[in-house]
Length: 336
Image (cartoon, rainbow, N blue to C red; front, side, top):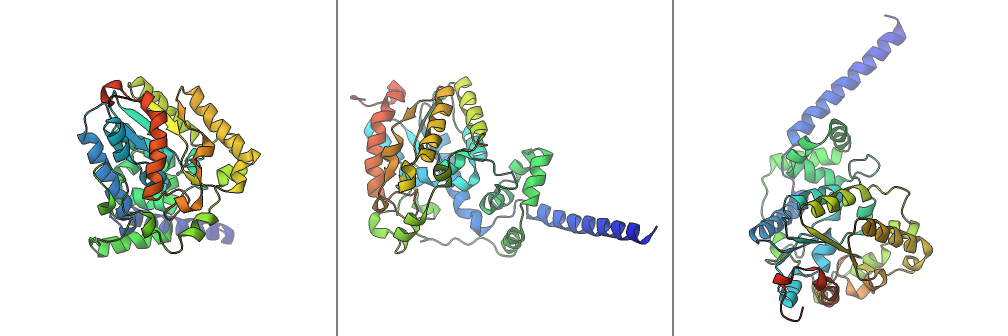
């Protein structure tokens, strides 16, 4: 073999050895809990258990942490009488994974309210350009069964998104058993009530640097508009059709978001119109108006999607007026 051939063979062999070693470490990491994934995992499990324990018909609130902080399942139950569970977790888990989890919870006769943060409409966590460390960390640490359910291409994509940072997290998770650290404020499973709602987000507990963080947020989808074929539309459409075929009612609404001047420009209006058209084509009612979900910065707790308890109560009461006609009559109090 000539010198260029030997070099190419050596390069290929070296790459193969490195890939095999990395693959071995990746397989070792599967199912090894990390501290960074614990909060999301524990609240997801708590919410799932609460929802499964309630017989149908019931109302399930679905979205990321904007739902966790922004809608009160307790308030909806108290006002309407309808059994309600807040399934809001973390938008970084992605729309496909999130709705896949709801499929395992919702039953015939239930109603699902989609309160999706705008980045979820853009959607696919397993595309290399859109992957995120939170999602990869969560799947590798907490849901290896989901990884094994993926197609070979999707498994490869997730493997390639498994960064050196995640390797370190997995190694630390193996060396140190998880230790309960109570009193983490809002971001602890102990902050949930029995309905899956967030507590410890009163305006009096607002972090000192919250205002600057909230005002610094600019939602890219609203600023620039939606691309031609948003990846998130596919799993949303698939879920809505699945729900309809299983006698599960789906309604949607706009997530609460800190108002910014650019959200009133044509690009934002175009994005909202396309979302409305998506749901209209799926025969899914959209509750409320986009403008009504744009709120001043002092309504938010620590991010541009997380309401304070006081603001959440007001927004939930407004939502109930739109929501009640879509709930099962046998669940409603007189007057609704």
